[in-house]
Image (cartoon, helix red, strand yellow):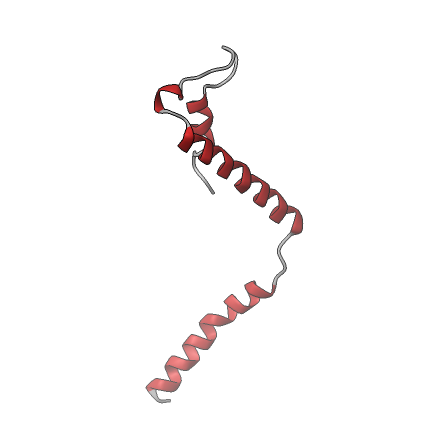
Length: 79
């Protein structure tokens, strides 16, 4: 087997799982929730960009998180 045909064989075999994944339809419920989550996170990010830094400690009532705490929560680890 020539080097070229060996490379082609390995590339074809390696790409097969990618074709199989692309063929699987996405779960519409998961897609909808992911889209809503991204939209909400985007809105909060835009709010954080417009909020002056000295106002990040704003808390409407003592029982709720401050604006900065909410932004930190939303910006937390993503999976």
